[in-house]
Length: 400
Image (tube, helix red, strand yellow):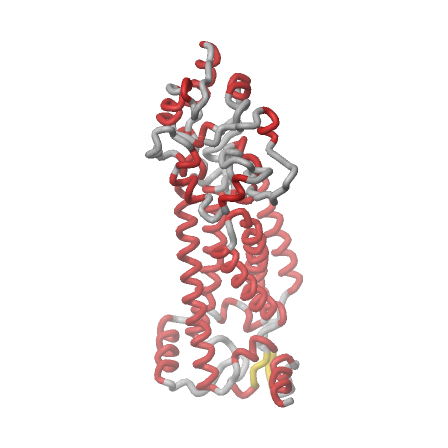
């Protein structure tokens, strides 16, 4: 019974001898973002590529809460405003030394200087994670508001930085928890309970002479202006042409000759030299002899060479741009293809509706566009009766 009483003690309202330091909006932000960041880390590190949408959704909710906290830090109640977070380096140093030596005996209504700086650093890291996530999404996937502004190389760098910031976040959170625990031990004031109930004892120190209340009206006005600005900017950026990708029209000759045996492979999946090697051996094209008349040869050759991987700035083009050691230039033997499909069971490629490793459009719904976005991946369940539409045209489609 005593255990339940201690748990309920954390959730009761402030008594007459306590100050409500942390208001409910701030506490809601704190614990909501804590849970969201845990979910973000789990989905970012453990989810397969085709479940990227869950990570993006969690990141979007986190971004909305962060915008609220930035507004509340300006117009919120007294000790939730950022004016109490900016401490001088001398104060931070003195407070850190006192905590280290165990000399801190009294708490304060506001955050101690060290934790104030750490809290600001956490907010900055979360903001940087959101920005680098948008950069990576725009550069590598050509999606989101930055798709028209960020190159693939910038997106790759953003992805690398995004992963490093995630590790840094865990380190700073550990420091934050350590400081809270240390100060709670020395001052005998449970800071964990304070962040749950918002209450601190009156005897920790005296409140400031001018206790400012939250200005909800200003928060609503500023929030609406901020949301309108972001929505307008995102729509304007979304109308710009994407960097490194464009819609592509497949020539009829390519569709008829190549699409008769397998899907009309997007030219960005092989570099120019690899396409030249393939086109020069059409008499023995993976065990089949393909005959092209003069006009068909010119049309298909120019189409594939002009739009080869070097002409694109997509993730797929960069992955497959390197020449393969396989002289036959089989896409499924490319190291990039092998790495991407490393965790896919081999049986998936043999059973309907996939039935072939080269039958990309079954799992990649945007394969014909050459985008190969992660969120467009859907691995179908095995069906005994269903089969690939390509096999309707030729039952023994060559395995490439």
